[in-house]
Image (cartoon, rainbow over all chains, first blue to last red; front, side, top):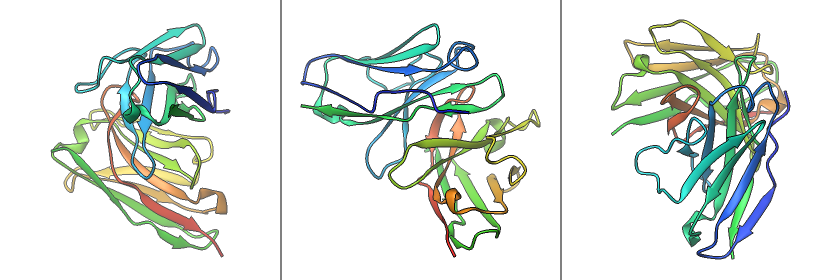
Length: 110
Length: 119
């Protein structure tokens, strides 16, 4: 199975909003609500920031929001801050009882 | 404080086997689904295997892991394992274990244990 498709990189200035897309198929992203987003800093373990398409775990800033339309999920970060500079990964449960990750997106805060 | 600590990684020759362990503290491992995710150096995340909470017995495997890797748990020790056999060079990666908070969404991660497959 191929990884979900994410842009390799995105960038934005402090205070701006950015959106990262995650495109799959009707067998994964389009099939279920089980889409998550993870933030990973270099040398650190991933941290969940969105679950079930748009759920925010306790302690995660409301600057992070998730959505889905058809086979594409999206992560929006509003009020961009320097500390948001990290790698971001989406994931989705699939009809084959497996989990697919996206290839990852490097966010640069200008 | 919920914590996961992986161990068992190391350097192994192609074709050999290795068992990774993941010890949980601060929560009962058998009450949650548990998974393994790997990340090759400088690369992205790849899900490896998972298992339902102890109430169920279902296990899940990525295509590359089927037939070679086995996920299991010892509830009495609060530990989850990943038995890996017929290891290949491409299995070289940092292996994380992760706790499921809902369904295939991971809220607690270990620090990872490095597996290097090389002759």
